[in-house]
Image (tube, rainbow, N blue to C red; front, side):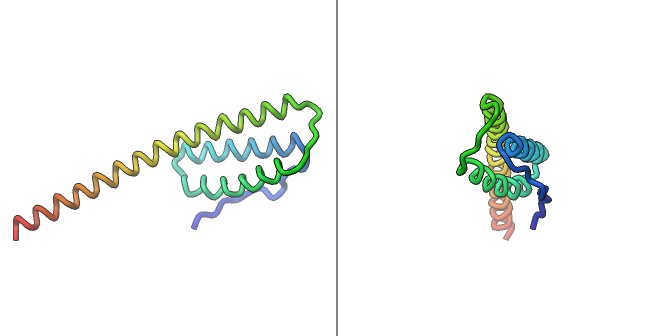
Length: 114
């Protein structure tokens, strides 16, 4: 079980919420860089509910172009995390394949030795 501490003082209101979502996205990115995939999944689940909540309401921004920049940065970091996830999945698949081939080789060797 992975415990992820999430700040309970989530900001309220347009840009503040986007700042908080960007901070959480950066944290997810940093965890992905460190290979902490269980923590990434736990934090992403919490972040996704906040994203759903944010975009389900009408929020007014004093400067919409700033909101757009936050959202673009969040999407940019998400793409990087997804790419790292794909790389990690491929590496894991390769390692599992190597393990399977090693097990098959050991079984074949044991049959010959019997």
